[in-house]
Length: 76
Figure 1 (tube, rainbow, N blue to C red):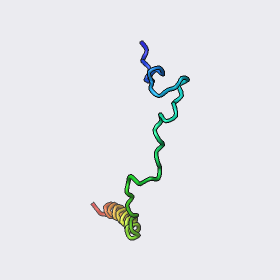
Figure 2 (figure 1 turned 90 degrees about the horizontal axis):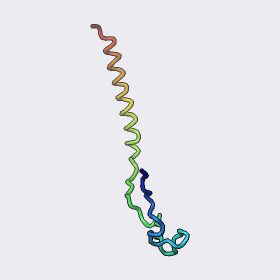
Figure 3 (figure 1 turned 180 degrees about the vertical axis):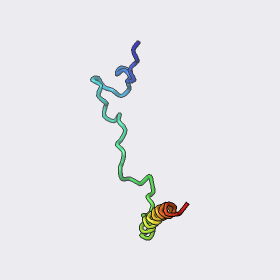
Figure 4 (figure 1 turned 60 degrees about the horizontal axis):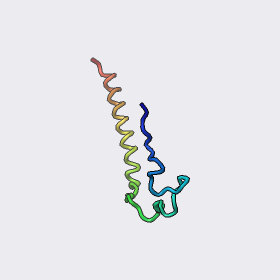
């Protein structure tokens, strides 16, 4: 059993000339790339936030390491 083709037969397809080419005016206009923005881009983060995030990450890593160093040195 064969699967039917997903392409419509050229005889039944509207807008095709003989030889399967599209007639002028049958294609939609191309999209405009710069007519307007569809998504608003927010402003970039402040300089303070750019410095605070790496400092917070480093502080958390140091606390994590310090916790295990103290735990390993703790008698018990």
